[in-house]
Length: 225
Image (cartoon, rainbow, N blue to C red; front, side, top):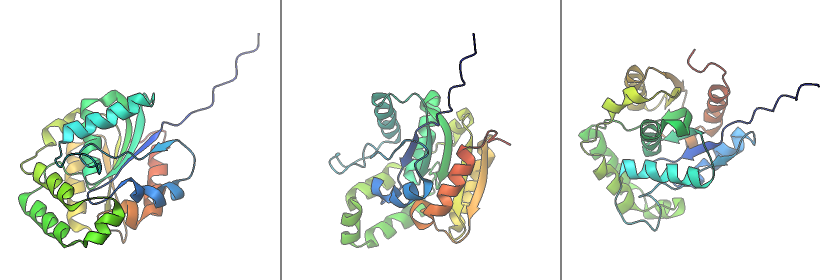
């Protein structure tokens, strides 16, 4: 009997987790640039949805993403995430490693300094209300995230992350570049890529460049090389 034809490779679904001060719609340009090569989802994270009570818990947000994937029948997915979304993706890689294929992360908050959080709170208070409304987010909810991250240190759990990781930072975000380099020392599976001319939210500022990096990394047959 002739052998059965090889089954075509089906890429893992791609989960897009937005950053602080953003909503899922922030991924629109990235999705257009990335193309239709794989199914994608950009969920609200628990504690950031418009109708959620004000308050945020990183583990609960990760659980919420895992629950949503399981409801969709997704057994494993790749992630592209920024800011607090990157922190949620890393937490998920620790809590539910079987659900995580590869990670492309920008600005993950794993041990944010109090000074940095204070500056972010000041910046958040200065954002015009209309801009937040247009983005579908609320100031109290964003400030609650920063309050929840006070004293948070997720570095000890990083040794448990086995998924390949690409850490992305914008060249204009000097603190982000330094943080990505430091984080790469704690993640044995990670490497760093700096996007020239981008700031901290590369998914909106440099969507095309991020999409190209994600394509190259997620399609790499040996991402740890």
